[in-house]
Length: 389
Ligand code: 0PR
Image (cartoon, rainbow, N blue to C red; front, side, top):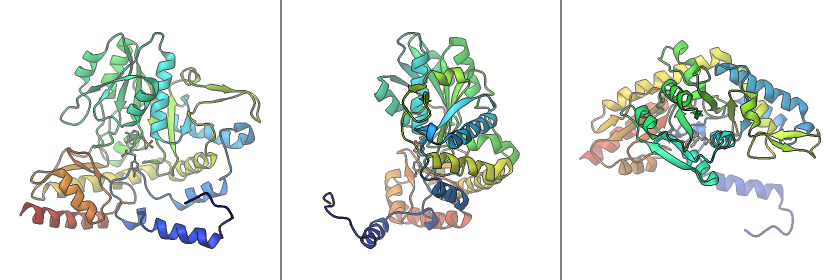
C-alpha cells in the first residue's frame, strides 16, 4: 500500500479494517486460552477512551494524571509489602524487566556483567542482555520448574551483576524460592529482581482464596525490585506494566533528567518517552474497582478452574500435566505423539494455545470459562483418539 496521496473516505477505512481484522481472534470468541491478557473490562476501557490524550512523557502537561500514577505506585507498593516503594508504570513486563537490569547496572560499582536466572525466565531478559551487553547464566530448573537455588549459588562470582527470581514463570506458572534467592543476594551484596509480571496479582490473594502462596515481594529481604503487570492478572488493559523499587534512592539511579518540558525540570523513569497516561488511569481505576475482595474472587475462580482442568487432562489417555498448577497456568504434554503435532492439531481446530516445545500451555485468565474448558477437552480427546490410533 503506497503512502496515500489524498484523504481516504472514512467508510473505506472502516471497510478495510473490518475485512482485515476479521481474521483476528477476540477474547469473546472463547478460543484464546494461551494468552496472559484478557478482555478489557468496560469501565476500565471507558476511562481509557475518556482520557486518551494524556501523555505522561510530559508530566507538566498533566500533573493530575502524574499524581494518580504516584498513588497507583503507592497502592501497588503496599500490595507488595512496601508502601514506600518507588516506581513507574511501563508498557509491560518487558520494559519493566529491562529497567530492572539497567538499574542493577547503574548501581554496580565495577564492570559486572553476569545475570543469574532460571532457564524458564521470560525472553525479555534476553532482550535486555542484548541491549546492555550482559551475559545471562541460565540455571536449570528443578522438577517443579523452579530455579535450582544451589546451582544459582554456585554460579555467583565477582562478575555477578544481578539475580533474577520469577514469581510465576511464563510457561508453567512456577514460583522460584525467592526467600532463598534473597538470602543469597544479601550474603553476596547482589541485586535481586523478582519478575512477578504474571504472579504479582495472584500470589497476594492466593491464601485468602484458599490456595497455598509463597513469599516473593518486598517482604523478602534482599529483593530490590519487582515487576508486576496490571495488564495480566491485574485485570486491566494494555499497555499496563509496572516496576517497583524498594526505595526512591534505588529508583533514582535510572531517573533520566529532562529539563525543557512544560513543567520545567523533570525526570523519566521509563525507557520510552511519550507514554499513555490513559492506560495508567484506566489500570488504577480497575484496581480500585476490584479491591482485595474482587481479586480474591478472580483468583479463586481461575485457580479452581486451573486445578480442575489439570485433573481432567491427566485422565485423558496420552496426556500428562507437567506440573500441578501453582498459579492459574496449566502446562501439559503428550505422552504418545509429538507435542508439536498436538499443538498443530489444536491450532487447526481454532484453539489459540501456546507451545513451548516440551509442553503446551493454557492460561486460565478471567475470560476463560468452564464452558470453554469443556469444549477444549472434547477437541483434545478427539485429537488424541485419532492420533494415538
Ligand atoms: N515476565 C513474565 C514472567 C512473563 O510471562 C511476561 C510475558 C513478561 C515478563 C513480559 O511481559 P510483556 O509481554 O507485558 O512485556 N508473558 C506473556 C507470554 O510471553 C505475554 C503474552 C501476553 C503473550 C499475551 C501472549 C499474549 O497473548 O506468554
